[in-house]
Image 1 (cartoon, one colour):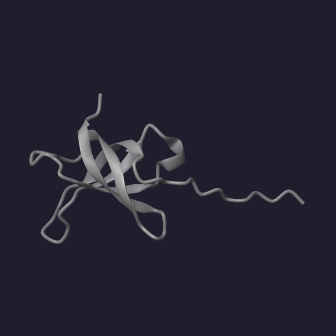
Image 2: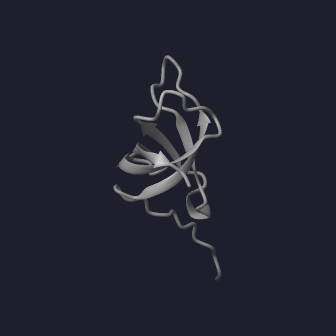
Length: 85
């Protein structure tokens, strides 16, 4: 029996990711929706980033440090850590 077991990558508070903005804030959501880039293991992981510059737009990339993780483990909140290089 050779069944493939789906491995869910482990996210940890304090991890720093490079993310790309995919949706800007609205009146109902204060923080932009971002996706992790440059790390295929976390490519579907969603991060809501706090304290981004006011001129942030879709497509911008920057570093974010994870501050809390959802119970499902599929999204998190992170602090803006600066522009991606």
